[in-house]
Structures are given as structure tokens and as C-alpha cells.
Image (cartoon, rainbow, N blue to C red):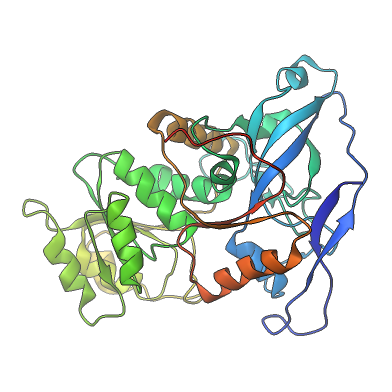
Length: 362
């Protein structure tokens, strides 16, 4: 029977516990009339998967397959015409369900159900096969390998909403700061904003990550661990536009305090995470400069389709930090979680579940 990757329950307090990985066998899925069976070729990790293992995430589902990011091939379909048209297509999966197209948030009364590792959604991409409604699929961008395509969904969707939908400043001539470059979302935000024509700058605690970001199209970067980094950043901005138009942030911390000095009047802070802590300061200069703080979480099914099309049209490639082979290779999969816990990755961490016959065309 096909394998799935789950966690086994360990005793301990949230943040102190570390639930171990294990494999379980599942019956090979049989599609309903309007479902398709996807053979997963690659699946990628996100920080939420580490939080689940650390007991720092809600509604953890022991025995529910992990991971929300996946690429695969449709190998079987139900009888409906909509299902049949997906036969043999290489696809990426929408990483969350319950949000169609409302710009303000999920329409579902049950809320937004992300794939992987919780009781809120029975599906996860760390499996050999899964059955799913084809309405949750997009064709994988043709220029990407399966590992690259698997790196796209959750980080790409989150970055798309924060950078394109929410900031509304990914435009030619605008200045955008992407903080914490290195993680999957920040890298995709950089790629989207550069492809849209903006002047993109980055911050990181690692010069190597800043250097890589410049190779990916950033105009420059600063080390946020250095005193007065905001002044160094301002010196990098174009002479005719010495203020930022938007900050795309996943850290929180002092971003609003620094933003008051860096952003133009009416500038935007588009925030998709708060890894520094669950609270941050909002200061009076932000108010006086009419700065807007906009929360942003993942995105709608409509935005997922827009994002996938943009990636395909622009030939963009998600950055893959490292891959390991095989869903039963628990030792090497654990090492990916170690990379994430230490913050050493630059880009996405991917499990290649089955052989990938596709080749990157770029």
C-alpha cells in the first residue's frame, strides 16, 4: 500500500516537545465522480510543519499526512468531464481550502483549512497518492522541475497576496523592502516584485543571503543586525526617490518603528508573519505619516491561479535550498527539519517522493 508521512505523538509542553516522524500505509485512493488521483512527485516543507512538530500549532492531527506543498501527476480520474480533462497532467495543489475569491478573506463558515498535519483538513502532500477535487489544481509551470514546482504553492501564494494584492506597490519605479530574505515566502516576494518592475531591497542577518538576493535581482541589501541599518538602506535608494513605498515583512519586531523613518507618506507595511514575536510597536510617527499596516495570510483560490499564471508567463523559478529522496527516508527528512529549525536554508526544502522525468528548461 502507498505510504504517507505523519507525526507520532510525544509527551511534552508546546515548544519543548518534538513529535517524531513516522510512515503509515494508506489504501490507494479511488476517485469519486468529480475527483482525481494525483501521484505526488515532490512535496515541500513550510515553517508551519516545524511548528506542528514542536506542538506550537492548533488542531494538530496525529495520523494526518504532513505538508501543504506538492506537485504531482494525475494518474486516475472520476467519471465527470471536469475530472477527465486532468488525466496525465502535471499539477500543483492549492495549499488551502475554503477561500474562493473574496479579497477580504475566506468565505467558508468553517474557516480556511490548510493542507497537512491538522484535524481541519484530512489531506496532506507528504503522500504517494491522494484524491482531490480538480478545482483545487493548477497545471504546474512547464519550465519547472517537480521539486521547483513543489516549492511554489504555499510560499508563492503567501508572497503573491502580500506583495501584489496587499502592498499594491509592485510596479515599475517603486521601492520595496523585503525583510528576512532567505525563507521561501521572502524569496518569492523578491522574485514577484522584481518581475513586476519594482526596485527591490532586502534585509537579512546573513551577508551570503543578501548576496544571493542581489543575484536574483535585488538592487541591494542590508544586515539588520548592524546598528543604523535603516540609514544604510536609505543611502541605497535611487536619488530621485529616497523613500520606500512598501515593506513586505514576515518578522514583526521593530518594523513599524523603522518603517516610520523609511516609508513615504502613505506607505504600506504588508505583513504576513511575526516570527520575532506575537506583538510589535505601532508608534505615533506611523500615524502622522499615514502609514498603513496590512495583515496578509496566504490567499484565495483566485490568487493562487493568478500566481501560477504569473510564474509560468515570467519563467520564474522558486529557489530550492535542498532536496532529499524518498518518503520513507526519515533520517534525511529529519535533516530538512533541522535546516529549518537552524534557519540555514536559502529557499525551500523539498522531499522528492517519486522519480521526476521533467527537466528544468531554464
